[in-house]
Length: 212
Ligand SMILES: [Zn+2]
Image (cartoon, rainbow, N blue to C red; front, side, top):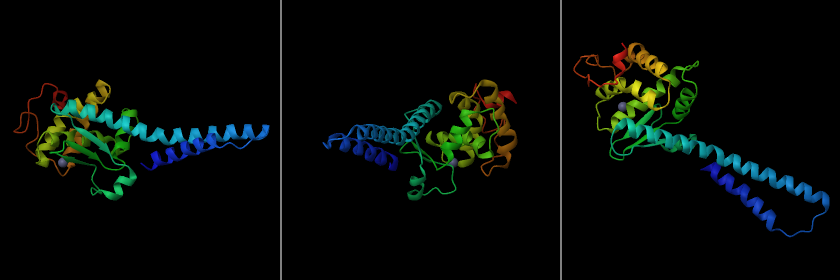
C-alpha cells in the first residue's frame, strides 16, 4: 500500500512538471528530461513489488483451489506492515475456513517463493517447511479443524502439492518423503495413527506414501 502511494506520488510529480509552463533554457530542458525519467523509473519500481506480490498471490490462490478440490480458496501474503496489525505472530499460516481464506504470515510467502525458485538448492529449514504449510492450510479450508488429522492429510498430499506448484517430479518425491520421514515425527501435530494403511490413510492414488 505504501509503495502504491509512493508510486502515485512520483507520477504526480511528473504530471505537475509537465503542466508547469516555465520557459526553459536548453540546459534546463535536458535536465528536466532526466528528472522526469528518474521520477517515472522510481514510480515503476514502486509498482513492481506490489505487482510481483499480487502475481504470487494469484498463483498460490489458483494452486490452492486445485489442491482443495472445491470452491475457490483465496491466499493472501502478509507484508511487514500487515504483520503489525494482524495477530498470528509466530505462526506460519492461518486458515479462515468460512471465508475460505489463507493468510501466509510475514516472511512465509518469501520462504515459499525462495523454495519454489530453487527447489533443489540449499534451502533453510523454514524454506523447506513452507511447502508443508501451504498444504496444511489448504487441508483446513476443506473443513478439517483437528490439527493432527489436518497435518496427516497434508503429509499425504505434499507430493501432489509440490507438483502443482511446479516442483520437478523427482524432487517433489524426495521433498515429500523427506518431510514425512524426518520432520513430521518431530512436529507437534504428529499423530501415531498417520502411516500407510493406518486409520488416517485416505488411500490416495497420488499419495506421498507410494514412494516409501
Ligand atoms: Zn493448522
